[in-house]
Amino acid sequence: MRPTIDDSPSGYAKVEKAIASLRDVVAPLDGHDPLRLGADRTPERLLLRLAEVLLGDQQAFNRQILDVLQSVVEQLRDARDPFDDVSQLKMERKADREELLLQRSRLDLLLAETRRRLPEPLDNGQLKSFADQLEQRFDVLYADFEVAFRGSRQEIMSKQAEHLSAVQHLAETDNAPVLDIGSGRGEWLEVLRDAGIGAYGVDISEKFVQMGEERGLDVRLGDALEHIRGLPEDSLGAITAFHIAEHLEFPTLVELLDAAHVALRPQGLLLIETPNPTNLNVGASSFYLDPTHRAPLHPLLLQFVIESRGFIDAEIRFLHPDPLYGRLIDEGALSGSKPILEQIDKALFGPQDYAAAAWKAPGRPEQVSL
Image: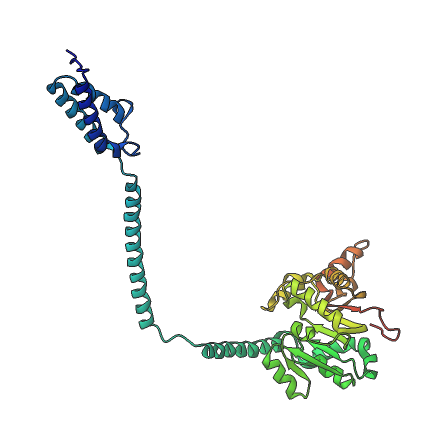
């Protein structure tokens, strides 16, 4: 049976007093996000229910109080503190930090043990000395390699003397020397000196520089590209490079051509000799005998690149055929097959090298011939 309500003034006074005291207790729960009381458990509804009980019998009031308290306790038990996630994150971060510190300790122990077992690390001076020793050993090895596979000095000088006519006119010019980049053993410099042509070389090998100096040649240690970039504009009569281009990365070759175009005087000569990959024996075999070669340069490619960098009148001259060149034709070809045999003969035994020559504008001097 529903309790009766005392609607007397004194009864309402009791209700107001009870509501005021209960609001002080329940108010902190109002709006507290984790405590979701539900539509039927809001503080206002609870207070209304309490008011009804206070106006009725004490037993019903007590039951309602117990219900309210039980409901609050259950909801507080189920509610999740918004700071729980932060606490959990802090715990996880603490665990991660402890694991990180443990790993660092292990690495420190490993590093200490490694240092204990290994010799003392090299300082910068020791590293440079070690690198210099390796470079010197390679220089000696490469010098021996050229003796074994490139040919004797006299043989090379004889071949390079074929280019003498292109620079012969420079003998009359004192202020426009020839620069030979990658001068190596100095054969070309010796040819020029014997012809009375002013010239000097640049090479990165201390061994080759020493060999050149021992022969009284002007050979300077350094990087060719850096050296040319440091020269005054229009200061050289010719720049020559014998079997250097195939050692360079293609972008470096382009930079070298650009720098050479600046350093050469008008009508200055650029002369580059390199292996001929259109000879199949060279392109597929002997080119790779040298471990410092990067890639063969097709004659048409080199001619195109030289002209694209501002040089004019670029010419290709094929050089040094194999001793067997021509014998395939001379020893008797079947009727009608001679053109085919000529192509085969050229591909297998034709020129093993070629030279690309070009001039800085206004072009080749009239007295110069290749």
